[in-house]
Length: 137
Image 1 (tube, rainbow, N blue to C red):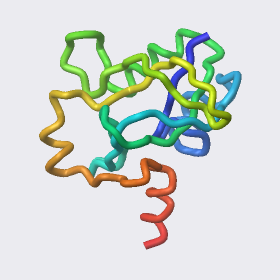
Image 2: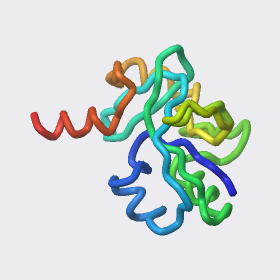
Image 3: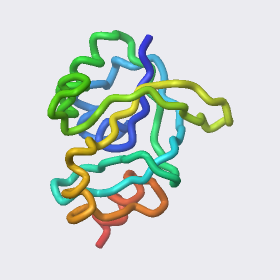
Image 4: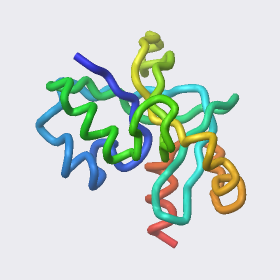
């Protein structure tokens, strides 16, 4: 079974989880990874490798073929391609402190100029909280 760390609209309760993953995951566990998280003007988040913490969830997929659907959603076409996001295995810390390896979609290095120019750094690394606070304003 493939495991994926998600930090944006693939988290439980958001639109892409509802459309693509509801009923198709064995488990959902709160977790975090090392990195920095930004909110983009297009309405979605982008994580890059860094020293901060990105909060999210580890999803254990029922069907490994779902990874290809997530690749399509995230604009990942394969290693060395012109990708929106890059899929990479990283160490992920679960809420109980256990560390596991799972897939994460990081914003592509080729798009970093857009990220730095237009993105809003989410200092606490929690996009779910950021979106809820933005919708209250």
